[in-house]
Length: 275
Image (tube, rainbow, N blue to C red; front, side, top):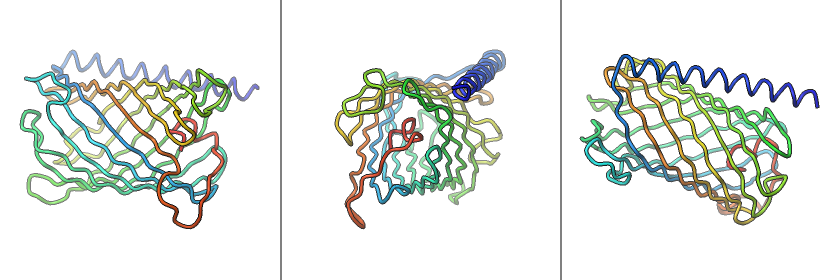
């Protein structure tokens, strides 16, 4: 019980620090540069397959549409397609270690000063369940991305990026993530990157905050809808993205590889799309 209270206190302090840092970024952005605001739609489909209690495979794909400075339609331009293959390993009840390989097709959108730029990305990710209780689940997630993006000279330039996320999930119809449950979730994530010609001179990349609701419609099918806000400090013009997210999650859907298996979900699963 005392451990749970200490964990809640630590989570509160982390949120306070992050909120203070975000306010500083917004304040500095307003003082030193103007801000371009865009509205976007993020759509994703996730398919998973349980191999054992320790291993899960995942395939996901999605696309992004965006408004432009001259057109506020959220579906005005398709800016990106992507597909990713994951492997997840669960060393303990509270830990999940993941790797993925992905291809991103960034489309040519002159209105957004974006040119066509293929990207190949690999990543290592670790997720830790910080708070586990019937009322709330809180996860911490760290990710290191190795990105290879085509630059203006048409060769792939390497960019490293580090991401740190805190995410809370709160069931509102049952005491757990059960079938036909409804749950709320909120997250905040900081992005840092190496400097390069293709990614720019800034070390801090962006902050992404989101708030959403999920529906566990059937035993292995979930739908999530969320609002996300991205703040990207840039020179001379900052960027802000307001996005609507829709995600469909089909757990244990991929064809059987070895034999049919359904793993028991861990505490760390509750804040991560219930994989």
